[in-house]
Image (cartoon, rainbow over all chains, first blue to last red; front, side, top):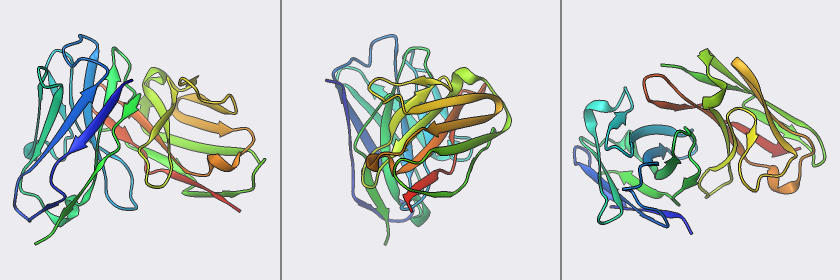
Length: 120
Length: 109
């Protein structure tokens, strides 16, 4: 069974750096066909794509947030990590990781999401 | 960056009725790179349609997708109680980035 699970802090302070981890199971991040994205959703609002790491370790970032984001993976731990610097209350959201397989460009499996609140 | 605009924002219908949801792109999108997702409260999105018109595994055939270029449509032929949810379209662009529409809520009338 393929699963993704997000983990990280529930609460961060403004200006702090957020680090989120996506732990995958049922597939390998070293598989040449697997990629993982991070997507967020503020309460009551739409989905926003943040970053993607391709199977060959290439990365892609949201244009508007590129300067604040870093995505990486540790295939031995089956984990994809997202860091976001200089957090602000507007970054309060549920953060999801999701999988893309092969040349498809659709997210076939999603994690349950983790809610992050930015507040002092 | 391509912007996806979904309409209407909210669709109020009764079970058994037909739902037609629109997704319009600010510039032409390859049909191969257009998808639709369903999201229920408190849940992660679920892939419904990929490649503009192909149903994902396990998706009932009352869901169908169509369109090309800048205009895409998700149709639910007969609404079941479990279909009342928010629907998002998504595209993948040449700059290797993804964008979502703002969503259409299908609510019970």
